[in-house]
Every structure is written in structure tokens, then in C-alpha cells.
Length: 221
Image 1 (cartoon, rainbow, N blue to C red):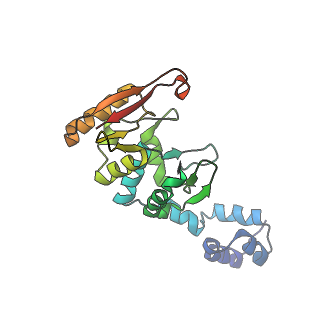
Image 2: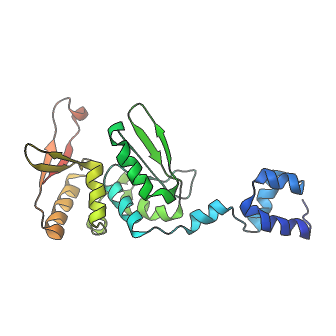
């Protein structure tokens, strides 16, 4: 399909701010033809420009790092070249979920209810690919000293709020780190000792018909 100079200039000016259907009507061309021409001219929608150029603040980085140590997940699907964040909380943690997503509001969250609680999912962003590479090996979440050294006090707070509990009677705190292997538990234990001067114990929870006979780990303070 031929494009004259005026049509090209209009497309270059209007494409970032207009829908394909609007451009199709004005230019009298099929929406697919509009998209193809825009792609050849390397034109992008405003939302695409925003996503591709988003740089995270230190606060946003810590909320993501702490969240990924806890209940947050970073997904990279076969239909997208960029990763997104997603997770869920019970209804009793709805306010905490809102607190977290407000700190990360630039990631454009979708929040919906389920039978179990509240689910939340961000849009996909190129800047999130770094966290997928950092935390996942063959689709399994991992932790190592490199990741742990990136955490500051805010990251630790988010990690504890995601996966921690406090037993008032025993005056002990726990981090439920069961998504990590036993060797990774030892890495976490050594990190708290050397970085923060906090001495911990690694506990194993296992029993017949408990957690489908799966071994679960948690760290006690």
C-alpha cells in the first residue's frame, strides 16, 4: 500500500497519541497497514516509550528485592519479551498489598479478588528482566549472597512483612523460607550473622500427611 508524504507526516506526528482505529479512519487505511507502516518507521506508542524508558528508584528496587525474597514472583511468559511482577495476599493483608503497590505504582498494577485473597499483577517492563535473571534458574526461584547483599533495611522489611511471623509468647520471629533449598537456608543464615550480627536457627517442618510430605524450612530469630 502506497503512502504519500502527507500521510507519513501525519502518522509520525499522531501515532504516539492515537489509537490504530482512529488513525485508520483518518488515513483511510486498514489498522494492520497502519501498524506495519509505524513499525517500519520505528514509531512507538506513548505507553511503549514509557515502559522502555522506565528506570527504577532505589525504593522501588528494594520493594522488588524484598518482595521476591518473599511472596512476589517475576514472570517471563512465552508471549512477552519483558517480565512482570505478580503475587497474592490473603484478605487480612489487603492494606499491606495496597502499601506495596503504591510504592510501585509506576509499574501499573491490576488488582483482583479471588476465593483465597487478593491477586496483583504489574504490566511487563524491560527493567524487570534484570530481576528475572537474578532470581530464577530454570524457572525456579533461587537466592544467593549476591542477591542478599543488595538488600537494605527497607528490603528486609518487605521480606519480613511478606514471609515473616512473630510469636509473642516465645518472643521469636520467623522467616518462612521454604521456597529455597537447605543449602540456600545456610546462605541466608550466614548472611544475617555476617551482615547484621543476627544469629539464627534453621528449622525443618516435615511429617506424614503434612504439606503433602514436603519438607518445609523456616528461619528462627
